[in-house]
Length: 302
Length: 320
Image (cartoon, rainbow over all chains, first blue to last red; front, top):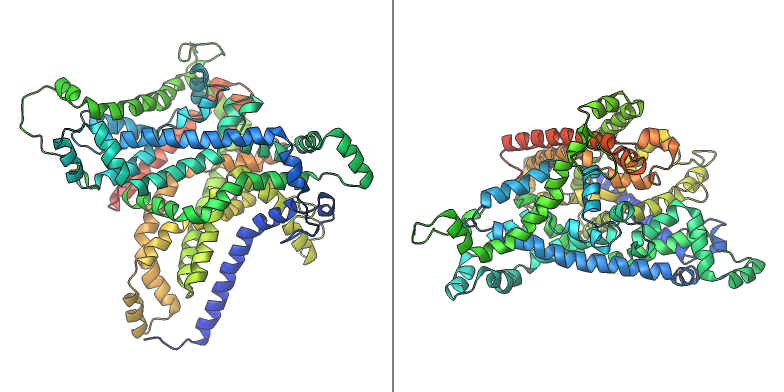
């Protein structure tokens, strides 16, 4: 039974679509505009007016940033921290979650309280800073990995999932003489792929996007991830100019000045930014349903 | 909670003491213990480290063994003029975000529900999540450009339409900064924060709407009496959680939108407790003083969380 649409309905529908379209445009436009600038000739960009597409298309901005060895190094660090960080954190967190899912676990009450208190109260930044210092993690790659090995909130989500797995699966393996390690590895993990994918994505995006640990604990340039390189570019234009200059090489630049081709800080920034988010943008359409699933599990059952 | 599923009857109740039982399930314990040790190191040692807020910590001291000074740093803190401003900023920014950025995802979810076309609906939803997945470093890069003084999209549009005569330095003026924080946070999180509401609305039976229609309910009546009424428990729950996490949400955003606090003009409007701790503690190396400020925040946070959980329990939904 569909009621005939009234005038008011039409007006409402049109307004509604317009509001949502406006929101989509505001959300997407900065991305599109940056992409357009990064593919546009740097000199031309300074004239302004670049909106949805490049006016004078060029790949030069990308050529410039890819000539800089810093980018490769930072990219390597970012990939490494994402892969290593995700795998190890997933392992530690799921092991804890598996144990905590058993009410037969000795000391479970104690462990639970131990896990809950940090969710309410923490030592804060300064004591944490000195902990990292005294553990000797300053200026090491491991400062990206070790502090994040166990995520308590993720553990709770995983525990809830494990508790929903029929006990019979575990029981039969136990009767056959398998120990808990085998059960965890061979039986529980294989049937938990949805939750593992979800948590892995949360951790992975967190690692890819992390910048503060690098700002706080790492001063060695070779250990800096992509986010830091981008950050240096936006916070100091000189860094961007230097990057463009060193990568182009003095001789080339001299020649270019004569032709009026110079590198625009804005173009370099946008190209670097795009290189930083490309993996997320590319995988995002495929992965977003896992995120949605994850937040649902976390919020409804957590 | 479905804890019972994994629980097993304690078999033949052999009389064994706790230690034997513990050793007997060593294969299970070995899965748990590494993570527990990790939590003790990375969550509990910093709690011990809070002692330095009551001491005169110097570089090279063993944490917790420095000279005791009691509440000296707290006294200094509450008398410092910049800390008064920091408190004001913390409260105002958190309150603004609560009042403005909490309801808008709800409105977004309701509006989206009123859309008939499935494809359009899904596309809007997918696009709206996107900014959530980029870091604030990238977000700041995009937004600086979007609001840039020369050829930024917003300024070009405003000047072009004749609303303003000369471009506004959106990220350079303290007075505008609170608004920029609220707006950019909305830009990044509105879609993501609406997910739970959208899911709750999806579960509403279409017959409810039809029945209401037969009873002569208009569009807004249906939205209010069915959609909003159904998701009200979700709203209450999320409101409580939002209050509980209120003070934690600002650090990345503020640090990056102020170029890591280098803009002194912005600082008087942008500095919140978290950024203050970082600035004073790590940059100016006043460790004990900064630790005191951090502890002050932890205590307020603890109070907020505890209160939030209490209220949540009243509504029949405990957090954990």
